[in-house]
Length: 435
Image 1: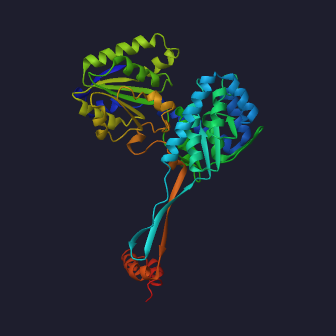
Image 2 (image 1 turned 90 degrees about the vertical axis):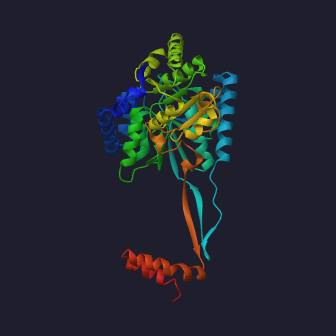
């Protein structure tokens, strides 16, 4: 991890200190994504298959979530593993049912003029679930369950195949817990292109979706961005690329716990980024020593070390400044490991998820606490929140106007329309005024 003293940095230095890994924005990522999209748009399913074979060494495959497939997957897992998946699914379902937006009451702004907001689920959602080096079945739960609670009619889930071209049993069990009828083994930018344009494959058809959801590597994140910029293309939930964690720690922090949290994100991906911010040099030293010690026995140590090459340990003058640094960075995950940690939450304005205090491990949120772990990265937290049930819904205003309301409000609207030079608008209002 690179050590930095915040007070000694100028504006350019501070910007560089909080920069994301260069790989996320390399031109070659954009160029390859564009090539894949152009090919899929031109050749459809054959192009999707060709890219899948080239990049993942396996053609797209549809896994039907049948009782037999679920039973086989359950038998392949330890009973405690299956039970943990069910507990996580239930917690996620409960949280999203309790936070599902409801239609508002009628609001009368002028006598006889009433308006309200009503919520409707989107028609079709494309759910991208990272996989490959690790089967992130938790992301499937975190996407498919909120979509189901929202009432989305068509949920199309895609995930990269395992190295042997199969689906991990936990992924199949998670799909069952989420109520999916199928799971596509298809990953990368080619999966996003398939969801964008729709395509016919050997195992069936993938229909185009209205909105893309899910985290992924730099290629997937760029593919989502590219798809949403196409004329008539699907919208995208948020920038949800390689994982990020910023830890604010003071002298009361447990170095072993802080180090474990940093490594829990560093092991995700070489492009993942972790940042430690503290007002204590001794605390930074202790945490970095613990990081190095824990690395020795970490199975994914090589990935974590590659990630740590882009990591930062930033010394600040006080914890208030640490909060300012966190808000400038806008992390996907923020862990506050300080005295009076709850008090600091009021100072945080930009974070996808905040984990407060010693016991609030980011890992608990990753798997089983309830809120979705699909969160904005790359500074998106400065303006966006993470996945909620509302992410899979749209709101629309509904207005009713009585004769009395029209008599009162139409002249006002007509006058304002003429003030803007829009005579047809004004006349439409005049016809309601009763004059």
